[in-house]
Length: 239
Image (cartoon, rainbow, N blue to C red; front, side, top):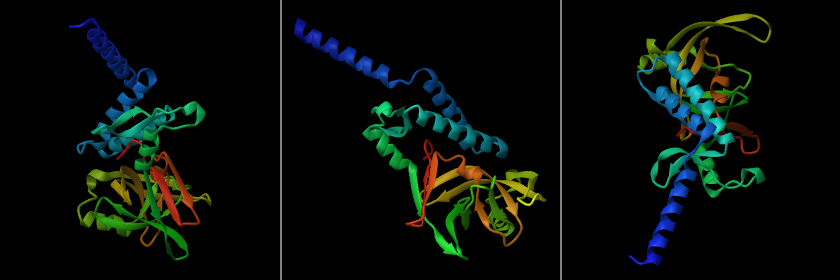
């Protein structure tokens, strides 16, 4: 082999090795990715008990936020399954890479409100079987579903005893107390995006369904557009 060809091949190998090393996350980011994978597996395992599944999903979504803050993006990577990779770009200068912009678009869902009874409500599919109209309520600690929706989910077999989390007492704005049943909703789908294993309280019949903090706090971000009557969610790290 000629010396020039050998040197060219050696240089190419060194560059390839360096690129591979740079592509591997290290330190804190590597730990976050490992913890994200472990909690994601537990979150999505059908055999995981309800309360553990909820905790694992919330933990996974917390790691998603930490990784995003560390300039890591979640999405398809050159045909490989979706995963976490460096976003690239120059985060110190506020310049995201093309990949970061593309993955941010993939993570967003925008849905239009509908007006019902003088308020804007958002249609969502619960447990893949029933449609409900939710008021977005950041002041509510949990998602809330009315008793008739819980009964409908029971009848179609998508809400079972395995999803029951007992009773909890809530303090209302006027200082009075309210005892409510707590359940695990296996999924809430808004538009094309789904959040799995969400804690919800069951409210009296004919009450409003509320999209509270047990849903909203797991999002990377959300905002309401009062001009377009729409809401935008970002589900980073969860497709």
